[in-house]
Image 1 (cartoon, rainbow, N blue to C red):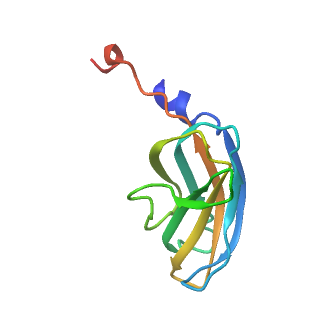
Image 2 (image 1 turned 90 degrees about the horizontal axis):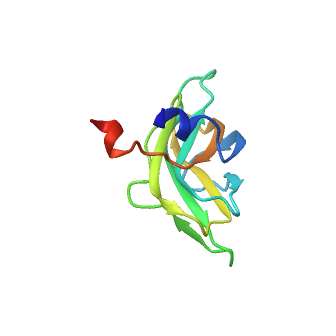
Length: 127
């Protein structure tokens, strides 16, 4: 029940797109999250051309326009069909940014970027 409650429907999402990947890249997928409290980020890669994303970064933007790393350990490796990063609860973010840092090829395709609020099971349900 907690899994369905957490991931049944995203609080905010965007279709990704084709991204140039590498240290010189300026391609990002940006998701507006103003007014959304989230603590999980889901990334999905379009696998029709194969799994390509080898490393990615997630950042959040504050109301003044500054970008910050989403948290320790959220500089992920592969995405594949789906990867979910659990992060500290964010209530002040206005945008979320995905950057493909490294890929098997110069171009990768992110299918979806979405945010969720986790619903953890109660202690009684864990027994």
